[in-house]
Amino acid sequence: MTNLRQIFSGEYRLRPAEKIILLVVAFVLVFPLDYFSIPARAQSVDPDRQPLPQDSVVYMDAEVLVKAGEVTDSIPPTEVVASDYPYGLDGKRPFNPSPQRAVWLSALCPGLGQIYNRRFWKLPIVVGGFMGLGYATSWNNNQYQDYIQGYRDLMDSDPNTNSYLDFFPPTVDESSLDTEWLKRTFKSRRDYFRRNRDLCIICLVALYLICMVDAYIDASMAHFDITPDLSLDLTPTIIQQPVTRKPSIGLNWAFTF
Image (cartoon, rainbow, N blue to C red; front, side, top):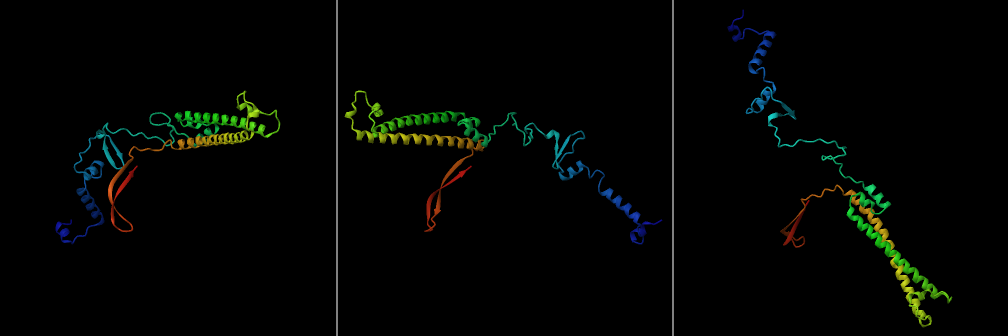
């Protein structure tokens, strides 16, 4: 049997099996059996961490250990909502108008686009604008028709066509009227009311297009984020002139949004 003197003097050579046994014994002595368990690893990372009781519930998320008793009610629960979920957190469907639909509704009937966008306060403006322009167009057109007919009667040689006398009281005698003055007056009034009628028609078309554009922009800007953090800061500063390179006093402003 090999004695200790031969082993320490180096005269004895260990067999491969004996080397493996010695390595296993050395590993067990250096590293305990529970060294690689989760509590032991957590204790090695944070020496001040207290070991968890056996009946504790532990949630593991992204390599973070959280004890169930440490979760407080101050943190609100997180609700995960799918991207295609049509309802909000309050259970109501959020208002999301379509710009294309708003334009087509406004083209079908002015004011329908504003109703679709839920801008009901614009409806009286649209209706009042069309009613006012429609009345102005009709009144100017009637005046134009009366003056153009009177001007035609003045220009022809038929004595029976005298509709221009309807603009005067019945006691007025036709022979006492200045024909040349009547021609100039009726021609001027005819042109005046025709121009006003055409302007009213142009305004009607412009209002019709404005209603369509307003419906499209209003629907597109329905979810535009208007932050309350808008601010404008004005501070005095010294500005260097680009030509003379001399300093001058100016005003510096910054717009934050």
